Amino acid sequence: MQTPGVSGYEEQKKVMNLSLAAAIVLLAAKVTAAIVTGSSAIYSDAAESVVHLLAVAFAAWALRLAYKPADETHHFGHDKVSFLSAGFEGAMISAAAVLIFYEAIRQMIFGVKIENLGFGIIVTAAAAGINLALGLSLLAVGKRSNSTLIRANGHHVLTDVWSSVAVLVALGLYKSTGWTYWDPIAAMLAALNIVRVGVKLIRESLGGLLDESDPKTEKEICDLLDQETGKRGLSYHNLRHRHSGRTHWVEFHLVFDDDLTVGQAHEAATEIEASVADLLKPDGRVISHLEPKSAEDHEERWEER
Image (cartoon, rainbow, N blue to C red; front, side, top):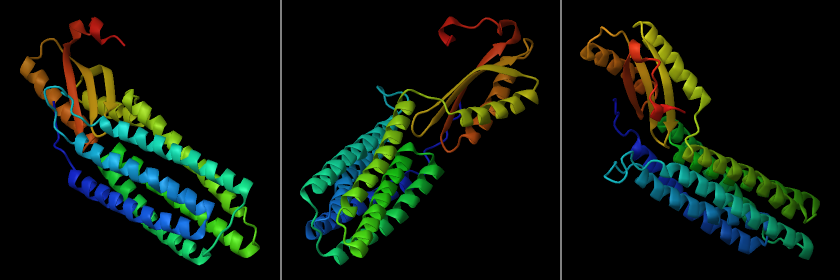
């Protein structure tokens, strides 16, 4: 079994702490802008930022738990909490979308009064720029480290960017036309996009918690196993793999000639395991089961799918 060490945790922790600090500062700025302007679109942006702060705080805690080593009660580690965090973020931003819809409809019914427009535009534009840079950084780190948790937070931050863009468009249209209903309309459009991202995150979270396989990853593993076993005159079956939020877990059976010694079979299996682990770096964990050809067709009942 190949067990690569933990990789990239410090980078992930740094960018997550930065995300948490940005969430606090931008929430304060947006709430101030919403109070000063009375804009429902800015209010919607601030409401999304409230749940964003809660979600980032949860994600920061989950990141630390995900890298906690395996123990007597958690033999496979704690990194599945990453999927729980992604689902929580999805649920939180979906809840924010409901709040935004409510406020937008209320403003359309009872009217909209917008003041201090310039201040609102400056704050919103600054928030959009900061979140754009932060969101792209989170996605880049999440991709490098293969972290579901960091990628989910990056997508969440980018929904905040789209919300801010919708606010800017609404305020710009209001300034040029004087029609106040651009404001709640933009808020509702932003809410629709937020719901879309929230549902996607919840779907990905459920897939991870239920060990849903990734077809692209499976093809890459199969192609590599075909190559590695082919050049050694071996075969394999019963391939299974899953991703637990940070770690790829892979297992398969390798079939050897009956006259090979255990030592020879083990050496070949170790080399193949190392190749698969390298494919799935930085955190690929691989287990193979050795079988003689004479037992290839006698599948153990406990391994039936």
